[in-house]
Image (cartoon, rainbow, N blue to C red; front, side, top):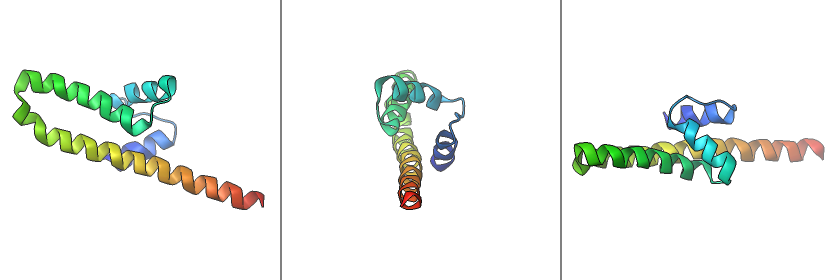
Length: 91
């Protein structure tokens, strides 16, 4: 799921979920995308934990962190590959 979100964002799109708000934070505050995804998702998670109890939210914390990191890895990995290809093609 994080890889899919990373590919969508890398293509300039959005899945229409919380990553839309994360993209806005990333654009306007120059915040790393993985941090903005975690910030938005954890905000929603904390509200849910307040309503349903923290114990139920523990697994979600781990999943959100993993999704954000995998999305960030896809985005940064492809950006680095594209940069290397652009540099070698200009030489």
